[in-house]
Length: 144
Image (cartoon, rainbow, N blue to C red):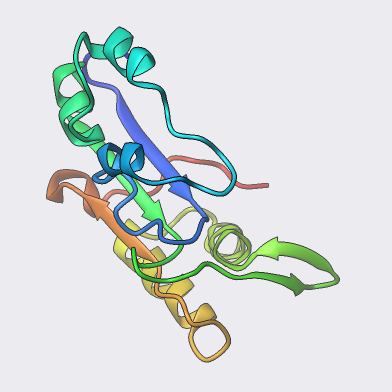
């Protein structure tokens, strides 16, 4: 990635709360759905074994990164029938709030709205991980 790129990651998965910090732990676990990258693939990426995505991002010139996680690292993320269709609950309410507020909320305000939507219905607490310099800015994505 070119220097100065802002990487914004959205994870609507169970145990996603530390999604950018714990990739190096995947090699010690056996995930149910997507296998972790092989050691060979990780070495090809950086020339050495993985030590966490934060370090990889910093070495590749990405100064700012943002993680939107559907839940804490010790929680599950709900899939639910909402408005007649099946959705990840976090994704559904994230997109709803983006549309309702026409991308006018700061990241912490958007997180607060999504947390309110989920509270009382789902046992998950969405997380936002980013540096203070980008926390107050509006989310760049356009949701239709």
